Image 1 (tube, rainbow, N blue to C red):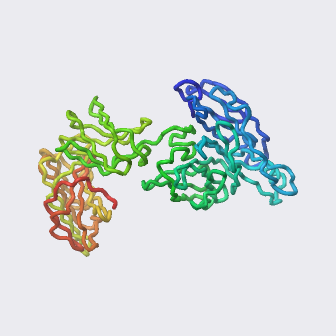
Image 2: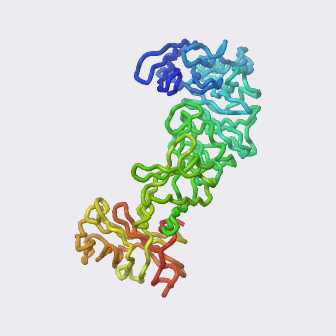
Image 3: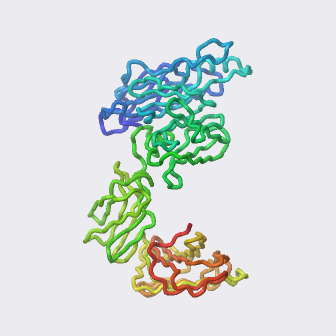
Length: 540
């Protein structure tokens, strides 16, 4: 999909021997001819030899209008077209012969497109186009001399997109047949410059540097369990600032490799069809900022503090933060990069609303709700902890748990947040180890009482919780017993424990770690806990 015509609409392209363009509403635009060397029938690949290329799009010459590159199957050329269907360069892009496939078959082996697609990216300092290919002579030899052992010689091809000149060092040797796949342009060495990453059917995942050299210092090629279809995907899985590569094989395995590549430089062509929207269009920014992590609310100072996301998920710096309250929209400048602590001061006159990150392309991060009057952030209210007691007896049927908070700020539960509608649960978590247990209280056990709700299940018919009470502006408490409490106290000490009561989208959050009365294997008792800085969550 691309904006090939001089309008703001999106057109759809499909190549089958000819490249045909349609407007976004289905109106026919143009047909461009593309020559193929041969069409081969009578093989297992018959159904795809009629056309299998997915066009790639980029504004090659910087005039604000897209160009599109495609090819038919078994084509000696790549065909770049302008947005009106006319040729972008005087001649299509091709390659010089790449040697002889076999001494007994003295025919130059020119790489041709088989069932692959291409990609754009800045490579070696210029906007480039890359696509795998297979030697024409070696394909013919293998097909016509079945059983001879004649190999098909495969290559990674690359061109200067502006001139159509073949890049130095290309076509480069490629292990295996690239089938229904396309390359990536992504930094895998850590220098901030993109390499070409591509895989095929031989278990090898290649990483080509400028000059066609394999990125051996980054431990390429990588080897998989089999055949990679489509493309690998590049991203920062663990938010540590470096790129991981993820690839699926036809045999049913998912492989992940860590690379020294910079996540902040992963802006070229990072997955099949370029981006999360499958546009196939170079330059599209489809990645929004990440969430606002570890958020905290200071009601007195009107501040929201959090770990900043990045322009693309968790890399770079967002353009700004947007606060929306009713019809009012206020935008605040971003001051730190991803992973650092950002502090936003909510403007006077705004007491509730949402805050979210905005990147330079206008992509929006997930909105976080806040309410200064109720003291809630993301539906979480940080409240005082009165008492938490957990007993983990040797006999699981004798386990006990009780939790109480007395806080005049306890906000009311209304609408879909009522436990009679949504049910409720109590999360008990050790923030240090990540051990957690959730005690469910289904909606059927709740009843409305004056200024709150009550839960009762003294026979354990619905789980370990026997009783619970929520009184707005006063108290919330939960009592549970027996083996359904899946939280163990087998460590030497807990240090601190969090307890979070959730009903619908609202949470009452407590953290007991200051005034600890008992902390030993099998028993934990703490009282008089101040409101925590953030809501405890499972995970270390």
